[in-house]
Structure formats: C-alpha cells, structure tokens
Length: 365
Image (cartoon, rainbow, N blue to C red; front, side, top):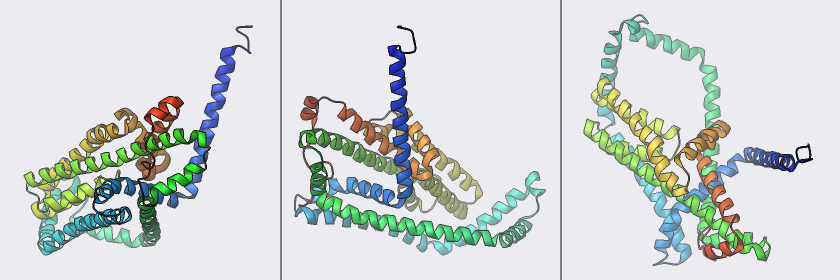
C-alpha cells in the first residue's frame, strides 16, 4: 500500500497542486479586480509613493512646527521643487529657442547631404521627394491619426485625474496616517494586532526603500548624463540632465524620451556626427541604469536579488504593460516582506515588531 494510489507522497503532492491552483486563481482575481479599477489603483500607488518620499521631509519640519503644518509644508516643498526644475528646463530652452531653431535647420540640411551620399539611401530618392511622399502618406492616414489623438487625449485626462486623486490621498496619508491605520487595525482581532502591525511595518519599509532607491538611481542617471553631455560639448547640458533625472522615474518611456531629446539638441547645435555620439552615449547611460544601478541600488533597498528584479520587471511588463513594469518590483518586495514576517513565530514578531504609527507615518490625530 506504500506505493499505491493512496500513498502519502501522492496525497501531499495533490494537496500542494490544489493549493497552487488556489493561489493562482486568487492572483488572477486580484489582477481582474485591479483592471476594473485601474485608475483608482494608479492613484493609490502614486499616493503611497508621494507619502514615502515626503514623510522624511515632514519629520524634519515636525521639529519646528506642528505635525499637520509640517506635512503640508513638505508637500508644498515637493511641488515647488518639481515646478522649479520644470521651469528651469523650459526657461533654458526658451532663452535659446531662436538659436537652436536656426542651428536645427542647418543640422537637418547637413544630415540630408550626408545621407544622400549613401548608395542605398540615394536609390530611395532625394530628401525633397521624402517630404513629398511623407506629406501624401499623412493626408491618406489623417482619419486614423485623429482617432489616435482623441484616444491619447482621453489617456492624458485619465492620467491627470489619477494625479489629482493621488495628491488628495497623499494629504490625508501624511496628516492622518496613524489614525487611518489604527482604524484598519481595529478590524483585526486584538490577539493578532502585533502580527499585523509587524507585517505592515515590514511591507511599508520595503515600499519606502524602493522609492528611495528609485530616487538615488534617477540622481545618478542625471549626474552621468550631465557629465557626458558637458564633456562632448552639447549645449543645455544641465537642463538635459534634469530631463534625464525626471525621466528615470518613468520606466521604459522616460529614458527613451530623454535620449531622443538629447540627440535632437545635439543635432540642432553641432550636427549629425555629434548627435550620433550623443545617441550612443545616452544609450550606454540607459543601459547602466537598467542593468547596473537599478538592480544594485533598488535591489538592495528592497532586499531582492538583481536576477529576481529583472525577471519580475519582465513578467510585469508582459502581464500589465508599462503599469505592470512600474508596480512589479515594489509589489513583489512588499509581498515578500509581509510573508517573511508572517512566517515568524509570535515571539519573534513581538521582538521585531514596529512601533505604532510607522506604517503610514505619525499623522496628526
């Protein structure tokens, strides 16, 4: 009977298989629910990111002013900092716009002469013919572009709504975080408060570590880009480094946009040769970001191996596209931290438990 159908190893394997199926169904249900309320999920995720970034600054202000006022001051500081960076970039470009526009025309002319000397390109016609054919193609596809533009406008509107909702939630997370967490904790049986408190604290530590890691990575990207662009002689090197810094917070799209902007500025100012050099150099910076800085810095903050992070990002992008790539690492880090904490014995949880109010900050009561 030890090797029959009812052998213990068969029963244990069957139980494990059913448990895995149940876990898979639960995960699929979570993804389905998130897809139904994607806007709310994005807003909540952004609010948690804003909260984790602003809490240390709010704690600093809390030393000299009331808690509620300190958190409001931290939010205002962040808005002024981001607005100042964007204003600096825009004003720098506007101040040299006429010069850049003239140089851009010269750069395009030089590029046209350069490519027409290539036999394969020359067989495709002259630059004037390319412009004529491109204009005809745009006229033929104007209807589809109108629909795409309307869809893009809808996406931008949803994004703006998510940001406004995220800021609204951030205000309450910063000022009433402890009160909100105590209400959630009141729904749990009293004998499990310590385990929930410890698990939530571990999850919040992992999430805030991820945001800090992203900030350090973005800062390193901006510094590398600024040094490289200054060395090769690209104008507006410092504003472009700010663009790289801000773009690093948007996976996949942000770095590509920063590369394109830097290459266009180099083309306008110095011609196609330097533009090619800048394009190659910025791609190298992006690869350092994706393959070195993010796995090492962010992975260390969230206690995940670089290989695990790479696989998680790849899986998240396959399942959820850009949104999946953005949230894959922090969600994995939080899940692992919570599970690791819940696996501890009650005595270990009591010893390593977090202080009340550290999950969402000691908000004003």
